[in-house]
Amino acid sequence: MAAKNWFVGIRTIDIRLIAAAGAALLLIGGVMWTIPTTPDSNSFTFDQPRRDFSSARPLEINKPVQGRIVDGSDADYYRFRSGSGGRVQIHVRNDSGTLIPALDIYDTTKKLIDEKLAADDSLLAQANTIYYIQISGQRSTTGPYTLIVNDSADSQ
Image (cartoon, rainbow, N blue to C red; front, top):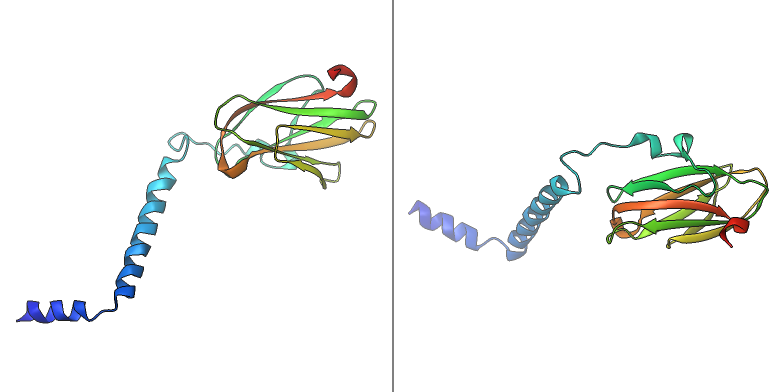
């Protein structure tokens, strides 16, 4: 008799409550399944030195530097000093089939002066000025890349 009353009690619950509880369980299960299997999750180390302006990695004009976007929240910061000024070409070579690079350029005061959802950009630089470059992956894409900054006189 007790089993029959329990079943009757379940049948009287609104189906929307059951659907909401099921959806919540699926969402929680999906998040718990996804988080531990992000790229390099077993050996992931948070690379603090390149995560902000204060410790941006220095670049030399015309010297390529390699980097890697390891997860969707990763962003690498670089700084370079313009020489005599003029047009500067910035190129991110995608070294993987998965990364879709995004490129942001900041001035000395760390104010955003240009952003590109592409791998190439150019900048009319003032003479002997420090600029910052931030590289990230669009839509949480990841992978290795090579960054190079050229003077316009050297890239022609």
